[in-house]
Length: 68
Image (tube, rainbow, N blue to C red; front, side, top):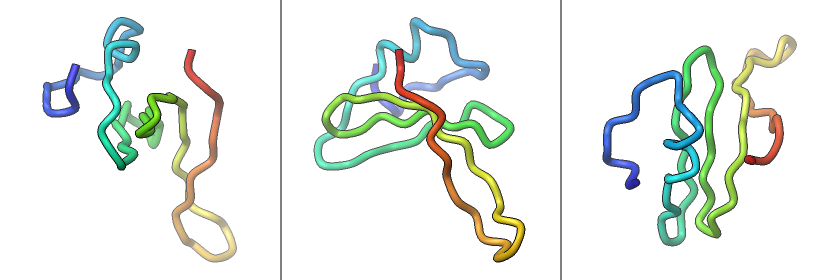
């Protein structure tokens, strides 16, 4: 499945496993509530959580683990 195809949230396992990597770039797909699914150019997949740091008030990502 290409990134341009519409994805409904919440994402199902069949959708996540069928996502294809793009050459020389990494992309994120928002699953809602600051949870992102990341597909790297090598084909590795992982979950990231976006949060705001309390002291600096800057947004950052925290890795939650690999998929599957």
